[in-house]
Amino acid sequence: MAAVKQITLRNPSPELTRRLRALSQARGESLNTTILRLLQEVVGIDERRQHLARYNTWSAEELDEFLSLHRAQRAIDAAMWE
Image 1 (cartoon, rainbow, N blue to C red):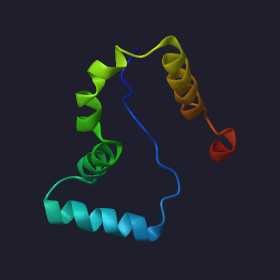
Image 2 (cartoon, helix red, strand yellow; image 1 turned 60 degrees about the vertical axis):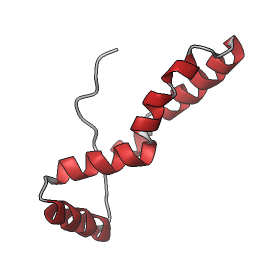
Image 3 (cartoon, rainbow, N blue to C red; image 1 turned 90 degrees about the vertical axis):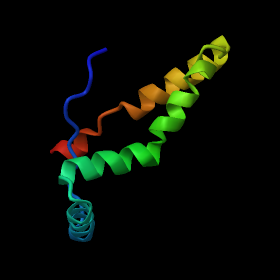
Image 4 (cartoon, rainbow, N blue to C red; image 1 turned 45 degrees about the vertical axis):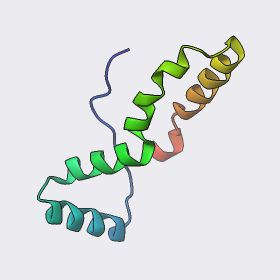
């Protein structure tokens, strides 16, 4: 599977945009770097890496459940792109 190169966020509120810009300026980093750092913290990238060994112990049913949930998250909401 190819790495995702870009993710688009649509319709951020003015308040969210203001706060993200202020945070990136306070940290002395780009807005993109700030957003990536926050997303990694929220989704637990480090925690995820610690649990990768566990994935090898899943039963067939657990794997099916995971893949089903993953597919649901990958669905595109066409109405957002109109």
